[in-house]
Every structure is written in structure tokens, then in C-alpha cells.
Length: 412
Image (cartoon, rainbow, N blue to C red; front, side, top):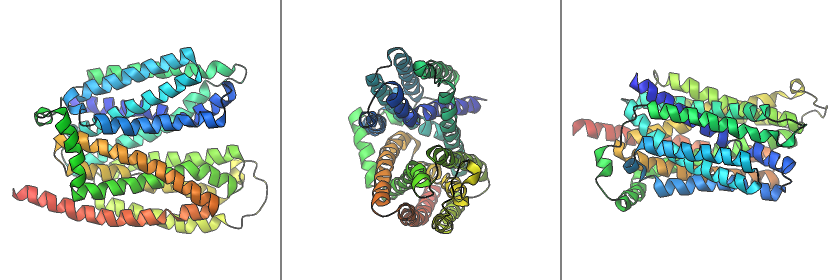
């Protein structure tokens, strides 16, 4: 029962941050339409979100165990709830900058805490991977839910009505806070608290000297590079390459998020029965195959007008399904890395995960955009075959090194 309460609490925390983090596109659009903000000015919201995640993760990851995972999560959720209420009341554009900075900082704290807590409620590598995939799957469900939640508050006859969504999100955050308070989350291990904050920070940096950690950081960077590259540019690909109307391009791109959510939830169950190594190898091969098979279908398409989803070419429905096979890779890589380390190092390792994931996402979007502009959309997506191949190699190395570590631990 206690493990169930903890799992529900961390899943609910992840869910609320999924809604808030991925609302940035909707907020940018609404800020332009209802607040008279220029596109250039509105675009800075993405930076307030991503940079705050990276900076906060790097700065406090090693300190969170000393503070306590439950207290850290409660603090992050409380700040976000207050920021939501303030945004609804003030509704000036500067407040949205504050909001997304608060969301980014809060998510960094919650992610470090959640990843560390998962180690408390699981007993082996497979159960760890299973729960991590399920939690990440719930995150993607939150992403999908966010679109519908924000849409429910949009009223063409009352332009500012959409701001009321933040009262609802603040109330939902308070419910999550109650769940976290009720969850019997254990304090950090005593070994976490045996050194100073500075030495904890230095210890986090020293993790990067371990070969397995270096391989992991590269793998996580490459994965997020692929996910953000595809996810960010898929609507543009649908619009400019497949010649679909803007609304239909966005609707079809949502299949990618749905596929990610379904893939992680399915993987959460599959990993209970099949070793993570075989699951990842199969997913990587499937991703590469889907790209190679689908992208040729996007060339020389008929020029007939597309007026509905049903008029869209087959490729528009198949290509986003890459998200289903992509879905387990990131959570499993994280799980394998965390299981290879002592539990008291999980918070520091998660800090590195979040930092390099943020950097990978930004880099992926920039590279894909550059290739898209100077070559073609097909070239931009074909380019993802390179990081897929590199991740495949890193998974093999991961398997060998983690197997060697587990054997050494068993013989010790």
C-alpha cells in the first residue's frame, strides 16, 4: 500500500508538470493573439523554460537529498501553484516569463526527486525500468491532456477567458500536493548527508569521469536530439513537405505525442517480462526501418487539395508512429544508468540527466531546423539515422559494462 501511494504521488506530480511544461506553444499563440505580443518577444518563453531546467538541475541536484525528496517536491509544487494563480490575476506578459521560469525550476527539482524515489520502491533493474517507463508514459498522457484542458477555456467572444485555466491548474496542483504529503516517501539515505553541499556538488561532477556515465550522457543527448528534432519539426514537415493545411498538420503531429505515451505505457508492461537490452535493440531497429520505409512515400505526392484528415497521405499517419518505438529508449537508458550506481548517487546522476537532456533537445531542434531550411525536410529526418546508429552501439556497450558491474557486485 505504501509503495502504491508513493507511485501515485510521483506520477501525479509528473502529470501536472507535463501539462504546464508543454503548454508553452499554446501560451505563445495566445500571448500573440490576446496580449498583442510580437512573435519574437513571445519566443523567449521557450528559453525561460529550458534554461531554468538546465540551470536548476545543475545547481541543486546534489543538494536535494540533503533537503529531502518529499520536502523538495512540496516546495516545487507550491511555488508553481502560486505562479499559476499570480499569472491568472496579473496576466501581463512578464508574468508568463516568471511562470515558465518557475515551472522549469520546479520540474528540475521534481524530476531529480522522482527518479531518486523510484529506486526506493523497486527491487531490480527490470522493475525499475518498468516503473520508469510507466511514469514517463503518464507524462506523455499529461502532454496530450494539456491541449484539451487549455482548449476548454478558450472563448472567442472573451479573449482573456483562457487565463482562467491557471486557476484550474493551481487547484489541480494543490490536489497533487495533498497526495505527496500523504505518501510515505522515505528520507534520503544517511550516506547522502554525510558530506558538505560543496563536496556533494563536486561528487556530481566527478560522475562524469566514469566511462559508463560518459557513454550514458552521450546516449541521452543523442536520444533527446532525435525526439525534439522530430517532435518540434513534424508540424512544419506536414505543412511544407506534405502540403497539408496548418490545422491538419498540427492535428496529425499530435499522433507523435500519443504514440510516445502509448509506447511508454506498453513498454512498462513488456519490460516486466523481457530484458531491457532486447527491447531497446528491437525499438532502434524498428525506428530506423520506419524512417527508411516512410520517407520515400513523402516524395512526388499528388497536388490534390487536402480538406480533412482523411484526405492526408498515408505517410502523414505512419511517420509519427516512430514515437511508439522511440518511447522506451530514454526511460530505459536512465533506469539502466541509475541501477548501475549506488542509490545515494541517484539524485546527482539525475541532475546530469536533466542538464544534458535539455542541451540535447535544444541542439536537436537547431540541427533539424538548419538541415530542413538548407536541404529538405526529408534530409532532416533521414539525418536521425546517424544518432539512432550511435545509440545502438552505446546500448551494446551499456549491456557489457552493466553486466560486468553486476558480476563484480555479486562476487564482492
